[in-house]
Image 1 (tube, rainbow, N blue to C red):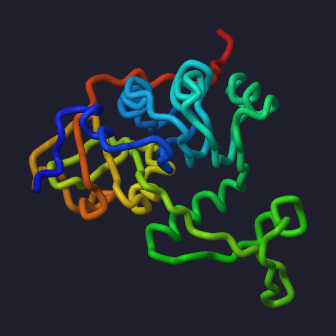
Image 2: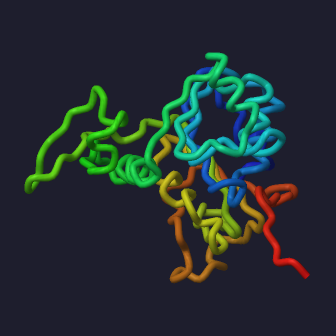
Length: 231
């Protein structure tokens, strides 16, 4: 069966209310802009979103937060979104904050088929509350479970019709880890090419992990915080 679909709306058409989604990206870098916009148009709700962050008020996952589509956020950093803060403080949004390395490793564990990992991150803090703790060589480690995501939605620079992906520089971030971890993985790319055109040595995500792929219509690639030198 062909993995290529026409657009974002077709790619996300089977995502239903209550789904658990992984969304690639770091800040606004490498986020699946087209798929997020399609989810907003579709109006699915009660979503659990696993993402390094929650976008900003008017871009990225922030667009879904505005529409009250997200029930729970599982993230590492959420400091750029006032609407996120408002929903958290009002009790409208459930939030699970996770150390960034633990977030990445739980994605990796899911991709590797590992049910859980032990990590020292968070031991002796509030993060450890209610979790199994074991000691290895005199050091405490927390048991953390691999994520179970219905869908992983990632964005790449180039992809081919077999689903092989190449990311561009720092847009690589969480995308390769999440691409391995979803039960169904959707990839949007800036350039979709025929199978065999990509250099095998340059492929970051093998096509075996990708179930659907499409070429995005356009990309804003917004920058969260622009810092420049004074003239």
